[in-house]
Length: 194
Image 1 (cartoon, rainbow, N blue to C red):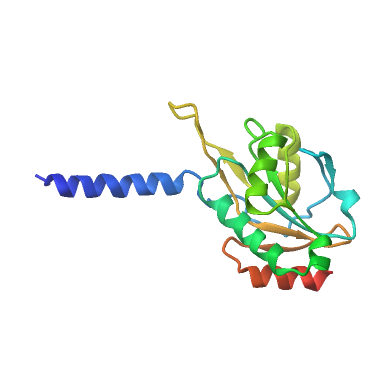
Image 2 (cartoon, one colour):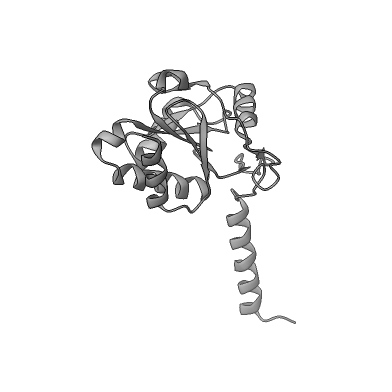
């Protein structure tokens, strides 16, 4: 029979696994890609009104797909993006936009997204669409996401891929940066395109 301390250690380990997997980098859509995705323009709602990527031609766009209630993957990616924005010169930053596209249109509103991304950097923009718009945009970028079952407390997680998509000034997908990429690499990628 296990001692109480062994039982508690086992329970603690199980809870850590559960918490970490709540918004895991499941790799859905990343590790199974047969070809590079096309990407493409989109129009979504931000707190400032419609966000149309065609209107942002001439800028480098860092596009990340995530959601406000994500406990781990999104904050890491947004913090990395913020560090990269801070490392750019003012002139470079003026030509660079980081956009978080919500994969949780059920809960994320333009106002909630604005508050969330502003926590990381005031120049970031959060945008959301309908479930159908989100699915179409995600498909064009090869983004995978799966809404998990609703928990008894009413909450749920959305497992999702974790790449940051770099769109060049011409509107074409130029690069895909993995989770954990250094801000130096993000900066170098942006500078190569400016």
